[in-house]
Image 1: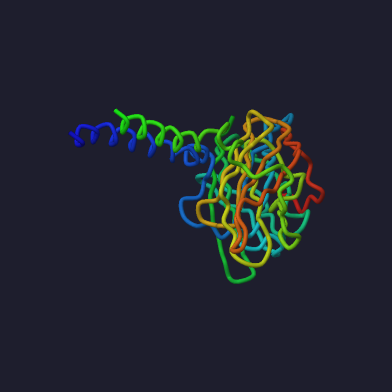
Image 2: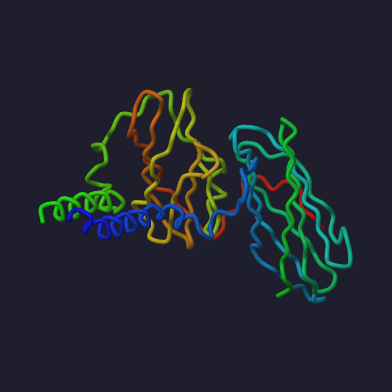
Length: 138
Length: 137
């Protein structure tokens, strides 16, 4: 007769296991890293401005940090290209540390097109990241 | 029939621990002691606190650290969670501009259920960086 409870216990077990996924749900669609990241970083398109010649200026807000050492100084380089043309704007490079981990950069495209950004980060222990982002023409 | 109620109540308690009201109930008392050698530091400067951006924070201090939970207590568009790869790191995120407060419960090798309160943090639509280092053409 004791075995009649087995399905009920099983059901409760399944329900409890489902509750364990709450934190994973919080991360879903927000956490961008598929493997253990050396760097935390974010490239955000703030706005696209159009001048009188119909050229488009993309303004980006970028931040980066070393995952294992908040205070570490890291070097960065930002390259701009389109599908058919590399170096459409001058690359931006420098170092990030302290309050200067947060910087802006921009690119003035001569003709409307999708813009590709390549973000390169270099850590003090030889860590390296190359990440590409595509921003569609408005 | 007694077994049924025992199993029901046992599972009810287990499930309740996952719920927020139960987390309040089981949380250590307000003002729980956090040793001075531990601190929480943002990876990004405050000017980088903008909506739709993952904001990482690290617990600093000697010894093992394990984050048990990250709970946003203010800011309805905001979420918080421990980093799945780095034991000492947690992330906060707001979908829209918001004022956020988060409660981080963590353990060290010697003590459990230590609490840090982060905030209130003002998360904006955008903020100008303190330094603008070089601009592309």
